[in-house]
Image 1: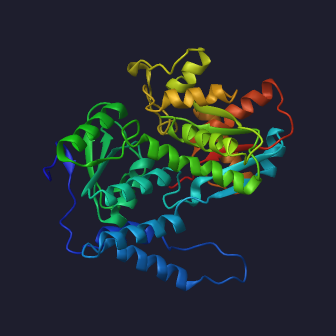
Image 2: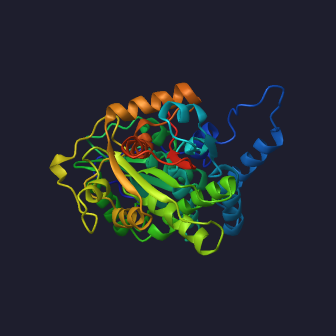
Length: 385
């Protein structure tokens, strides 16, 4: 069960059972927080988070105690991200109103924390000792952090050809890195086979835990509703596997069925030009989400979070776009970099360029057929250097 796979990099033995959670959590939970002029930090809050972290890490404590502490950490630190009225971007693009759902305030700066923490909680509850996942970078960092806090072993599969900027961050979380030949889809397959063989928790997209992942992302819809008190006209989302978009759509569909909103927003999918099955299938008016030719998928330093030839939850995302009368569009690396720079200079938000693909799809439609004045939301990921 604990045998290393081929190409696996092992960290030195841990002499301190709290070491991995300190290394990761201290860097992301309870660190420096920007405050308004004249405000002072509340030391009791950070002391409480530290106490919760230690309670989770205490393997001799009853499992109910550890689970409750981990749930409290999730409740305090994950989600409830800001919804930012981007008036300067509105002036720049000629669209009114644009709201940015900025996921950068999550512990690792991305929406991936929502599903990573939910699944690690599930793994802890079900008695797993280890969790495994394949990643291009962001998701691996999120799972590594969550697993380190829960004191679970974490095995992260990364394609040999990928050079994610967050590799050191994944290692600092205590994760074991497995470099495997092939593409991201091959890494998912190897991680999933490892989970089956060694009885690890499988946190990969497109598996048995998909309903849990969709529920976690559905919370984004609830948070948008809490701020706007109704659904916006449209929600623009960057897509890779399609899980985020499908989950947010499910959240708004639930709100509408319960009479909370007056409508379901139109869903807009954006991704790297010619590199995503969801967008390609929409543009070709195909009835289902169809895989791309793996040989035609090309990774760049910009599009890496978006590209794949198979979208694990692509069918659900494609149907969400169509059911909501939404649309999908490609985005170039140059446009993603330019819009990320505009958002940084005009609004002060440091966003991952790839996450701008959804907003670019919204802008592309507006330039062809001007959108009416309404409320439009774009989901953005924070950028970590």
